[in-house]
View 1 (cartoon, rainbow, N blue to C red):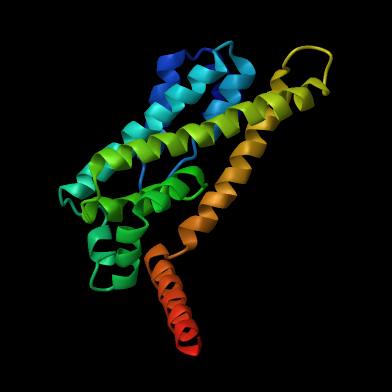
View 2: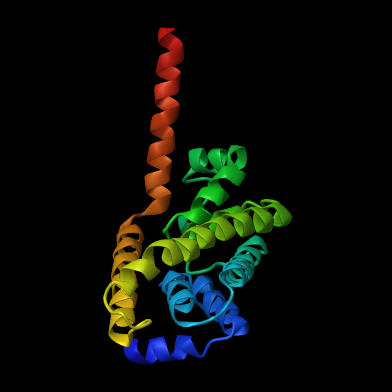
Length: 217
C-alpha cells in the first residue's frame, strides 16, 4: 500500500478501525510496526474525536500486549525468547524485574522500544496479570495523549502554513512519511540491541557500584 492509499484509507476510518489497526501493529513481536502514524494521520484527516482515538488506540495496544503476555505467562516459547532470556543466565535482571516490575512496565510502555521483548519476561516470571494490564493501559494512554494532542497542537498549525486550504494531500503525505521514517529509525536502532545481555550488564554494573560505595562509606 502506497502512502497515498494509506492516507485515503485512514480518511475512511471509524473508531473500530483505530482499535483494530493499533491492535495489529502492537501484537507483532519480531518485526514491530509503530502505530503512532495511524493515530497521527487519523487526527489530521478525520473528524473522529481525539480523546476517543487516544482511548481506542490504548485499548487496541493493551489487548495485543495482553495476548503476548498471557502466551508467555502460560509457558509458550515465542521465538526461543524463553531460552534466550532466563533467570539462570540473567539473574540480576530477574531480580530487578521482581523489585521494580511496575516501573519497568510503565517505562517500556511509554518509550519507543519494541516493548513486547520487555513484556515477555514478565509473563515468564508470572508477574501479576491484572497489574500488568492496568500499568500497560495507563502507559499507553499517556503515550497516546502525547502523540495525539502533540499532533493537534503542533502538527495542524505547521501543516496549515503550507496552504490556505484545509489539509492538502501532498502535505499529509509528507507528514506521514516523516513520522514513518523517524519511528522506523528508532525501532531499527532498538531492535539491534541485545536487550537481555545489555540489561544484565547494566544491572550488574549498578550492583557493583553500590557494593563499592557501601564498602568505602
